[in-house]
Image 1 (cartoon, rainbow, N blue to C red):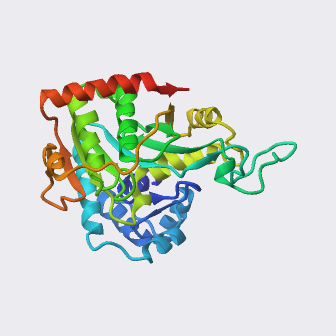
Image 2: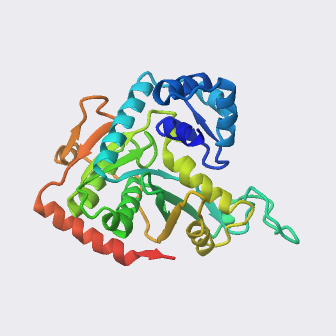
Image 3: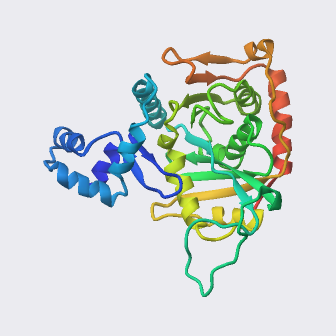
Length: 334
């Protein structure tokens, strides 16, 4: 019954990237009705509530999350995302969930959590950025179907260019080997940040680095505003990384890379970590003329949140291949 509940909540689960606690849009009573209607399993709402607790779902978090209000098209967008995921799953094409994890100070700074040890590690009493060896921006790419991920740690700004280079790193190091016949990819992303729905630069670099560089059709679907925790990368990958290094200071980029590479779960999660040493410029503007030249088509429903980027001309592909070679040279795998 636990497995059946897990399957029913596949597209209706959100979670905390730090604690790993999860919540769902479905109530115990609705889940009980679904079990009876679809699977002929009769069970009370109270039993469903107990089973949800065993699966680390939290009803308290669910109530708190919904009280802040939501976008009027929230439910409609969730339905669109569900249909897209089902479509790509049916054809065996990759579905990746992407986002930037919380930035981390590198150095002897307190990291929340506790570890078994003889004596507590002494750390700085204040988290001053000026005293950090660096500020890490971990960008995660989680493969929803294979339960595998790639994390690219940047030491520069979290920009759209950095985000797309991280996604391209996933394709070059993992995606094209795991999906050798696929010609399309579905990207699930938040509505804000470096991979948000509004930044033109994110779409520009997806066109040049991924669509043109690898001949891929890129479908992007953004979660509604204020719904970032429904993005699978948050509760399926980031939460496990946070638990793995809890209570241990991230004294260097190498230590951070090692902790990410060593993260695994009973469900078989595997993660590869890479270090991106490049400096990324902030505030890159994409003029109207250049933006109109991109091969982007909006979906009929909620086109600002759902769109597809297809490969363009051979000249653009040649430029993209040049960037692929740079990625190979400048990314460091631990």
